Amino acid sequence: MRESPVQPVRSADAPPARALGQALSEGALLLDGGLSNQLEAQGCDLSDALWSARLLADGPGQIEAAHTAYVRAGAQVLITASYQATFEGFERRGIGRARAAELFARSVRLARRAAGGVEREVWVAASVGPYGAMLADGSEYRGRYGLSVRELERFHRPRVEALAAAGPDALALETMPDIDEAEALLRAVEGCGLPVWLSYSVAGDRTRAGQPLGTAFALASEDDRVLAVGVNCCDPADADRAVRMAADVSGKPVVVYPNSGEQWDAGGRGWVGDATFDPGRVRAWQEAGARLVGGCCRVGPDTIAELAGLLGRTTADEGRRDRGGR
Image (cartoon, rainbow, N blue to C red; front, side, top):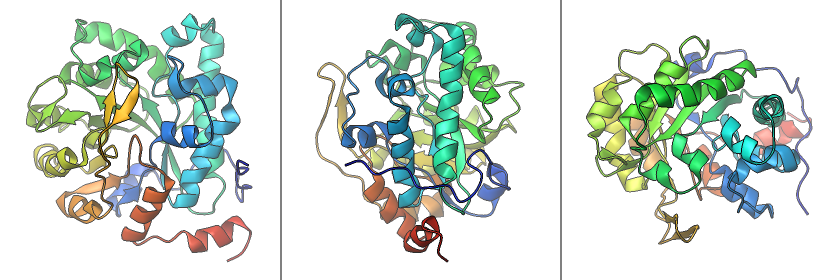
């Protein structure tokens, strides 16, 4: 039987007292892991083109439960279930713009409620995935969609505005496959009033579109809104190489949350290969400049709990606080 979300011990809607950027300046923070794999572990069917975003409408309790699993594992930053949520994708399901905007807001509210289950600070980052995620054909791992920067900006701006209006602590501009889309999103977030992190999906020392990572990271170096830059949804070995480069090129804190090491087969819609994610990598990541660390696809709560221990956190005392103890 699926566990119920923990009972809040503070206001479920209250953000942490410290801004996320301030907390990063004081030390590393632990991200959550892959939302989709946790939802599947809970018995959810994610075969729909909307992927986990479908559950914003059809199963919000499952999303909150998945966030709660990561809070219990020690995560300090939760990423919302809005990666594949777009006005266009919802429209194909017969969901109008007003209702879609409500679902964007719900993604933030569900994460905030799960964060409210413990006394410690837990921040919420609203996920803004790439254009290709909306297409649901694997093109987010290739980029170069044939659209201009201006066209991509027009696509992203409405969802950025809808998510920002819901009051997350930051926007996660994540799994960017190429520099053009990263540039478009940095334009789209102008005026949103929130800090962002920018993370690329990479292959070796290049973006998925084949551009040099140094050039990609440099895009954020002079942007004060970017509180961290780095990589996600990539092979752990590629993350190892990218962290130091991101720190050296951008001069900013680094965000890193790779996959398990397995590879996504877009045609077969399944994972292939072996898991190579070693929680011990977090030491080298920190030494190289990482301040937001966690996992992406196929990295679950057990691994996040291991990372919590390596970062000097324990979940036992937090579990006692969940039950009202000290």
